Length: 132
Image 1: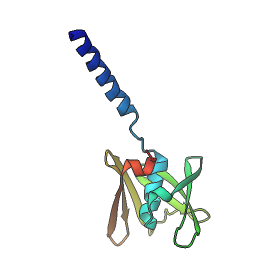
Image 2 (image 1 turned 180 degrees about the vertical axis):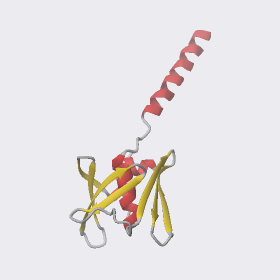
Image 3 (image 1 turned 90 degrees about the horizontal axis):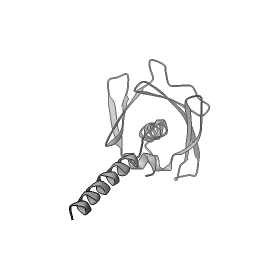
Image 4 (image 1 turned 90 degrees about the vertical axis):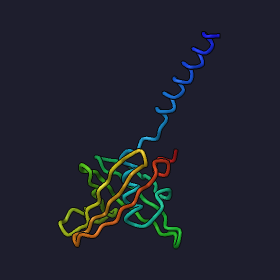
């Protein structure tokens, strides 16, 4: 009886370890989805990662209202998201808003800080960003 209990305890602890390994990992793709969703007022579930090259994530979405296609580029520098439209300039000018991110168990928090001192904060759950 004790041996059976020990086996059950071992299986439960191993299953817990496997469950932890299956936790969604939020990487650059998820952070970029969250940032664009926060800035554009969209649901990150509609974002598609088109490609990754040279540390840059290219992502887009189709706006449901009118079917128009919107595309962006995103890279990370420390805790900052640097972004641009697909053909536009990188938002790095001192007058541009700063987009900061943090990752926690709750998901990704995006803070948009403007030069006038105002800010906006949005948090997106990990499951929304990773599709898991």
